[in-house]
Length: 322
Ligand code: AVJ
Image (cartoon, rainbow, N blue to C red; front, side):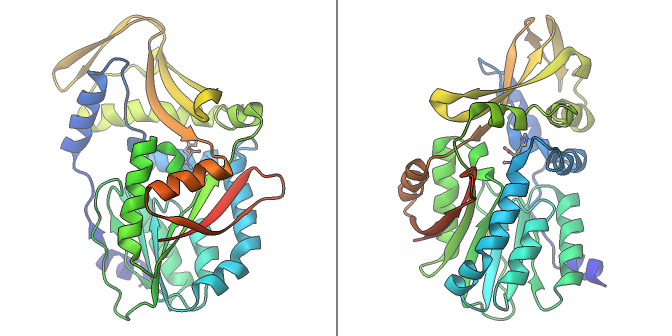
């Protein structure tokens, strides 16, 4: 029954295959080439990301989870009862369950997630664990405007939840745009709870994006496998390698797929040439300072109302208000 209810309420704005095709062709036509990281998250990519969060080097998920547990009572008093929790890029929904259980009688929960499989699975799981919370899942790309479903019971306020330092996957201008859209969605009395990975020893950061088991490399390469599956392109996965380096002057991990030899790739009847050693950018993961994040939020008209970092200062949560 939980699954049926989750299906029935689904708002599906899933990005069509021609969006992926258009974005892939545009990115491959640029110099240097690039592909958008949002396309990592098909069913297989979402599974691989879950596996990344279990790698010993990938501290982000574990540290954020512990910080959230610790910070929740204070968040619950700041938010009050009857909130509509809206989550962008909900993934597996593991952190969400703790948040919804820790808040005071949340009225409704709207996960906005690009991966349909991950969305349906996590919503079904949450619905059976939290029967009092109205589930209003939306399958959509949150980098474009998403009309939010209205809960049956009028919520007291909206809380936008954006954990995992997902904001870090966007450029400065994109991040400002996403925060500004959140500000719009949350209304005058709303709040946003944002997870941010903080600046630290670059060796720790680089290890997190180059796990010894090679799960992150498989995750990165799945982007090409996805294009082959969905667009019928002919990327040779053995011809590319994952490379993630911390660019200190830009405070971000930059992830590339590096062509191992000179090669041609066909996408929808168009041919693209890769030189040997040519690096195609596929992801940024920005790392923040306290001040840098406050400035970013301010550019979107949001103020830091409260916040907390874990004891080592590796990861932070920030509560924002308009
Ligand atoms: C989606 C932001 C949680 O950038 O750390 C993990 C994605 N990429 N390893 C991140 C990712 C490579 C991840 N987040």
